[in-house]
Image 1 (cartoon, rainbow, N blue to C red):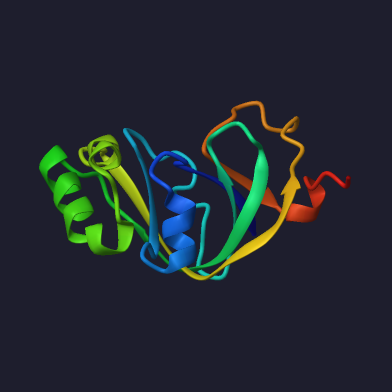
Image 2: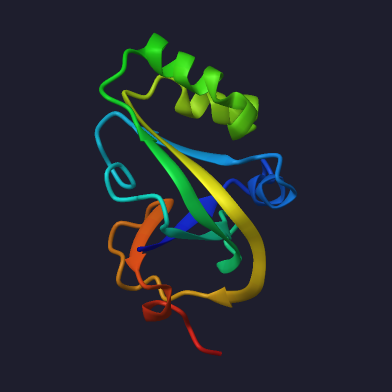
Length: 143
């Protein structure tokens, strides 16, 4: 399965991933929302910065996935803190994810820059920061 993943441009997440400083991505919510249960080891992630340029700029392979059970705010904050070395979150990012009831921690490997390309987002009614796309070729815009 391929996934389009929006990264925090202000926090320079893509740069941190490419440099190897950041080796894990986090997502969380009050309920079990995407990518909870929809991402597996071996899947491929396609990275776009959340700065409206709309270009896929990098790829990575999912090395492992950790899905939390329902967490208290304290448990959630502890999980984020314990994984901070791999996550490399800014204070704002930490505050965003710590305290969520359900967390998804996605380990990444083989992070690479890619020739930039655009995707067709029309098929996604609910634009989120994580889009499972089955196969990237189905949403790639040929220019």
